[in-house]
Length: 280
Ligand SMILES: Nc1ncnc2c1ncn2[C@@H]1O[C@H](COP(=O)(O)OP(=O)(O)OP(=O)(O)O)[C@@H](O)[C@H]1O
Image (cartoon, rainbow, N blue to C red; front, top):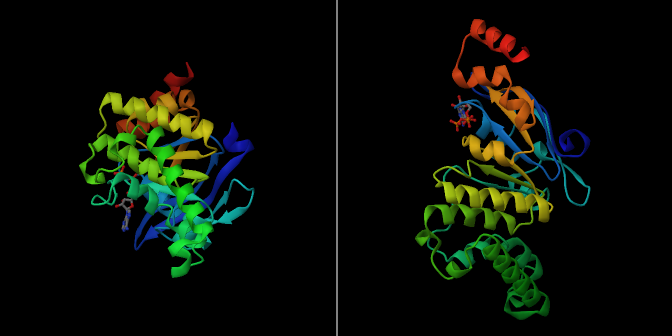
């Protein structure tokens, strides 16, 4: 259980309030290094809000989120501006709705993701951009990395096509390739399997397993597709009404009466019955 012995992300007592509404209530969780961790729960449970707090889109009302990166440095995410969460803490994300630069080519989308590294190599100067060796090397490295991720995602033949011309499932994989070009410690994916057909869904599973096993990146995903969640997750966290109601391996979660009750929307009496049945 790497989420206990070697967490890449530790969330402690996270609370997020919007005016009168408490979307997340005193939530604590760990994400294991090298694990695929799924956050599941009924609609409105607070999953996206947790992602938004981790990735700097929301500033939490209370709580601490610490990320230990690949070099062993710890970053307190709730104190960092959003761009430092990406560039210093190395947290990357994708969104529920695809957000690519649809008019740019597939390759350009992957190069834009590495813009910061290229600017650093240019010394932030026109002369640097025009041709120092350092900049040319950085540019070559950026193209090599982009080509590597095009290959890993099966998109090499689409490199020069506009991103907007790709089929939906290919655009989803391109988003992941783009995020991976930033070499994240933690990759947060918001419903990556939404709208995919079974073949695309199984390609996605393979891609996510390869990312964890070969690229030193931990994956945190929100997903409604239980076939994806149960097949590839090492660890599942279940939210309901902004609180954690269960946390464990897929096997543990599958048989947890509180989880079944949250999904079925049963009342307390029915929950007691489910708990008794689970103990038999
Ligand atoms: N910016 C916001 N302002 C006000 N309320 C918000 C905001 N963002 C989220 N909420 C509320 O917080 C609660 C949790 O929403 P959230 O989107 O995190 O749930 P979710 O589990 O991701 O749901 P879904 O599975 O439907 O995407 C909801 O009641 C939602 O209306």
